[in-house]
Amino acid sequence: GAVVSQHPSWVICKSGTSVKIECRSLDFQATTMFWYRQFPKQSLMLMATSNEGSKATYEQGVEKDKFLINHASLTLSTLTVTSAHPEDSSFYICSARGAAGGSTQYFGPGTRLTVL
Amino acid sequence: AQSVAQPEDQVNVAEGNPLTVKCTYSVSGNPYLFWYVQYPNRGLQFLLKYITGDNLVKGSYGFEAEFNKSQTSFHLKKPSALVSDSALYFCAVRDGGSGNTPLVFGKGTRLSVIA
Image (cartoon, rainbow over all chains, first blue to last red):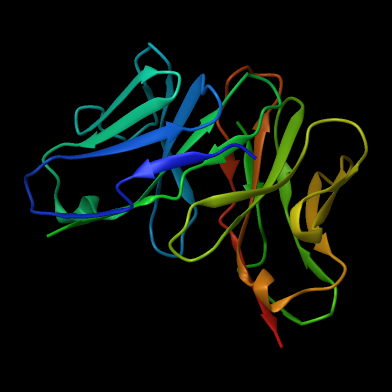
């Protein structure tokens, strides 16, 4: 199947700093990318949907100014957590999908963010 | 709006026995259904999907799932469980008739296969 990579796999930062997470589709062009957040022993919660070259669409309750998403190319999307606080600590997972319709969503390995 | 229900938080099965992980869904249009597996501290791995065609879908690692439209179910099955199948399983759905919609996930079912 298609491969999606994320970098970094884990990051520890101080409260108030910003952290950028990269998501890349390695062997296909991702017209749409999704960012999810997962708390321990819980399901994935969709944060936002981004199409290449367009502004991301955020889910209700997700602060767009805090979670900046950029989908600059068909193979790269970034999520920047600005002014991170301990409550932002979580497992962030990106997902990418190629052509619309029945195309499968492929997931990255996730990024564990810990804010001290 | 679409939704997925996985009624069991935990399923325990003995190695070599058949396993079933249940999933029911709600969607206004045509359901596109997926199963993913997650190992600890890892992302999700795609197992199988139903878009159209045969109701019985075969996927990776010997897993299969049966689409039942009347019961709005898409249960995951495997004839003979392995200890290595122990993981967290997610069922997901999207409305196939609504363009570029994201997947909506169930809460997950933890499968434990006991040797």
